[in-house]
Length: 193
Ligand SMILES: CC(C)(COP(=O)(O)OP(=O)(O)OC[C@H]1O[C@@H](n2cnc3c(N)ncnc32)[C@H](O)[C@@H]1OP(=O)(O)O)[C@@H](O)C(=O)NCCC(=O)NCCS
Image (cartoon, rainbow, N blue to C red; front, side, top):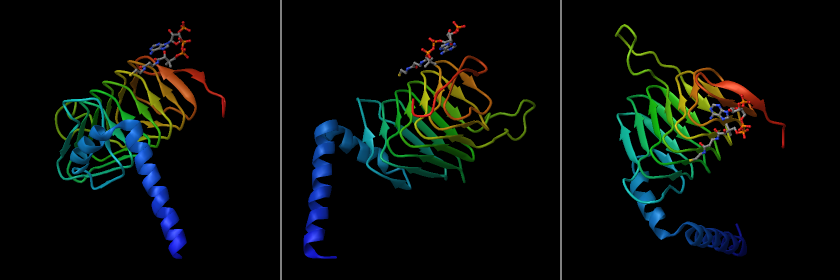
């Protein structure tokens, strides 16, 4: 690589860093470094808006996040051997909780509103025994409204919207708005619309 190209790349990176710091402030970046230490792989993590900071309960799993923002009170619980992946551009708002017994994947640029719960396990069996579990996969650009619950085994397609307070127990196709308990389709969104 030529010296000019290297210098160009360096300046470009520096500009991006300055722009990001200007936009979000220094403190969320510093707190983000504190939160980030729990992750096996991470982009630029922002811990926004005060205390309590996001708490990460890693019980021997693997947590990989892109460049994400975590608001106060977020809690991430990753069981032994489980995986949690969160794509870049996604934020988890206040009080949101994620529990993974095996695998929870959240895509890029998702808006997860406050007090949402996403879990891939019931954490108890109905008659005791091993709690049932099934992977949760949330696509890109999904908006999950406040206090919604996403239960085990659910896949939510790209660009979909989950209404506030919904209990999502079945898959949601791409570009679909669901609401209620159990969540039902209330609207289909046009591509690019
Ligand atoms: C799902 C949502 C996006 C739908 O908005 P919308 O397209 O404008 O929907 P409408 O208000 O036209 O409602 C359409 C129908 O769905 C129902 N509905 C809308 N949202 C609902 C919800 N969260 N739960 C149950 N039913 C809902 C309405 O009552 C209405 O029913 P009707 O046709 O029988 O009268 C919106 O209602 C919502 O829940 N937004 C999330 C807000 C939020 O949590 N923000 C994050 C803050 S941190």
